[in-house]
Length: 214
Image (cartoon, rainbow, N blue to C red; front, top):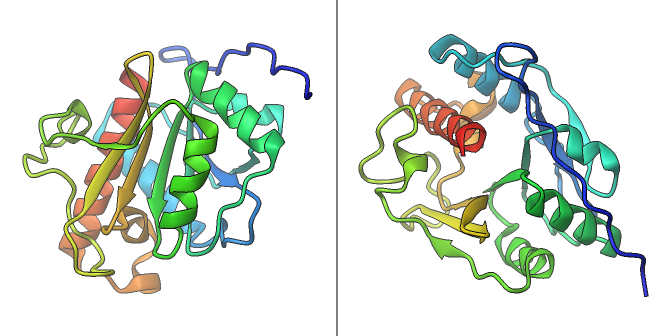
């Protein structure tokens, strides 16, 4: 039997003292976890320009199986392929979420089935549930009265914002059939119209603000 994960606390930036960093999740399974590296940089620049949050607008990634995971208050996961976490990654991510961490997952089209399976391994006692439109994540900075904006068509289904909770605290936010993070990328990458990019950056800002203010 593997040794239990020792309790650790996710580092939270002290007010006005240290900049917030966002890390891309490097995961096992063969999915392109690394795609669109400009996405987070552009989002964090937008957050810096439109809020009072001090951010470090750089691209960083973190291996889910390492203690470095606990250096980041927010982790971002995306990709098109399969997510297949190792047992160590599952245990480490579970400890991260149980100790104050926040995971945002954006289905870049093609990872939905495997993400649901792996999240069930991470938090086996929890079920993904759709967040109501009055949830604070849709109103934390910009107002989205109808929930998630539709950025990319994918299967032309309505966008879904799903959540997992630990002790009543939203710790995983999973977006499906919308793909906001594609709208964060440099304009020439996906050629999204300006209004779509703006909507994606605004909902991304809400996610950051909510995750930090929980």
